[in-house]
Length: 205
Length: 228
Image (cartoon, rainbow over all chains, first blue to last red; front, side, top):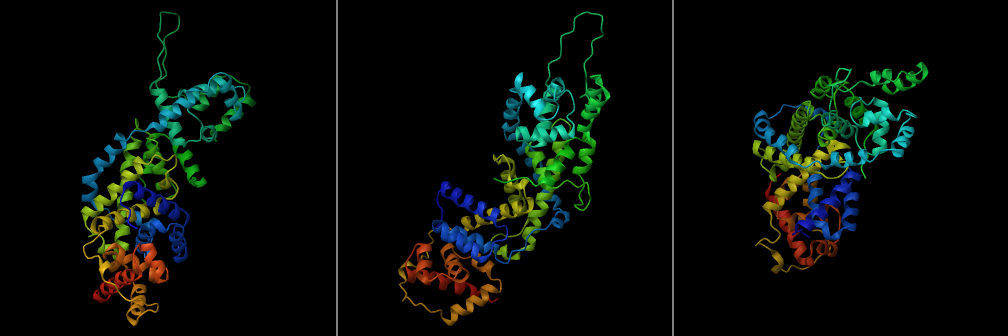
């Protein structure tokens, strides 16, 4: 009836989380059915149900209430530190996925996201040196199954960590881009026929 | 598997291609009726992705999201005075409940957190987790006043006293019950709210029928003593 171990507690929590996800405002019958399905967790379910009785739900307006400034000021540092102290391996695993896209896979990806033969342009986007336009970003998030934030953060990190070329004496003046090249500028530099350039510029609209 | 609202997906893409100063301006909009307001679900995705670490966007987002979370936790406590029996409403309680919810958000290893899908129900679920943890702390499973020895004759019909409790419960005495020992409140809940027969109540609680009835009567006493 009462979960004693952490494992049992985690199991009850999972059951309840899934249930409340399915039924955000459960009826009495829903609770009863849940107890019938998980009689071994009846006590925990009953407690949760009791907390739900007569409960007033949150509404979006509540976010505009007054803040307990004292409570906020004394805990915000811990909140920020926790974010940075928690390992974020999502970007690392995404980086591996993206760096695996090379050669024929890169050409396939260019076709898949609608860039056709402009593989170099896609390569520059993946390396973070060219700003990904909104339509391309949308398609890439679907391909890699990640959020736009993760992809954008990866591109930023790639740009910041890019290796710089070693310059030797030559005719040209050495040049390093300090900022990410915009999509329209990158398209312009390709010197494409106007129709093709226009098609690519549509990715930014 | 939770899926992101397409509208939130659109807002993510919209935000990601903006320049950092404009991203920060939008993130700091406090009025949710503003068309540029960034929904908390989107902000959660941003924080979980560590987006804008080098541009200061992440730090601002963390502050704004934590601020919203604390306001919502506070609002939820205030809207539900029943829970005053479980926790004393104070700045310390607010800090503790918010910190627990925040830790749950930041350390969630699922590819999509429920907070990215529907933020308000997620906050409610975290506050309930906090309350349940408080209940567990207060009421250990085996209390010394275990009434297993009190063997009471089994009866199938509700007594007038029990019928009165039905009305009292409906009138909002949940808070009183929440302060009772686990088996007591569970007996009342299973009998009153779920309408289970005594054998079923006893089986679910894990005791004999007379004992279940005894727990139930203790609950009634608590309700009657509350004088509501």
